[in-house]
Length: 91
Image (tube, rainbow, N blue to C red; front, side, top):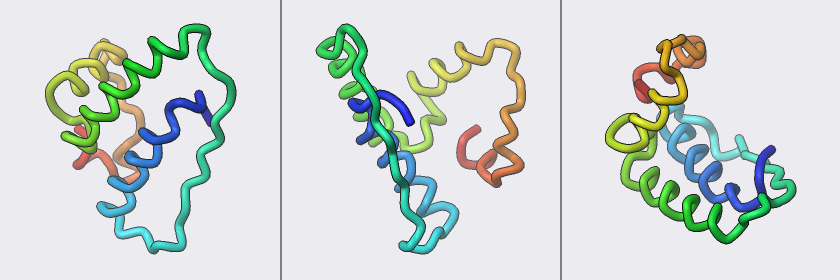
C-alpha cells in the first residue's frame, strides 16, 4: 500500500525480485494505491526520475539509489534482507 502514483515502481521492483527468486508466474503483486500528495505534479516528476534509475539498476545497489538508501540508514542497521534471501542482490 502506498501513494497511487508509485504503483509502476513497485511493479518494477516485484518483477526484478520475482526473476531472482524464481517465483512462479502465479505469484502476483497487488499494489494498493491510496491518495495523492499535495504536490502531485512535483512528486510525479521525482517518481519518474526514480523509476528510470531503478530501470537502470533494478536493485538500486549503486549510484544515486544506493546513496539515497544509505542516507536513510545512517547507522547501517540490518533490515533483515538476509532472512528473505535478498541480501546478496540488494547490498
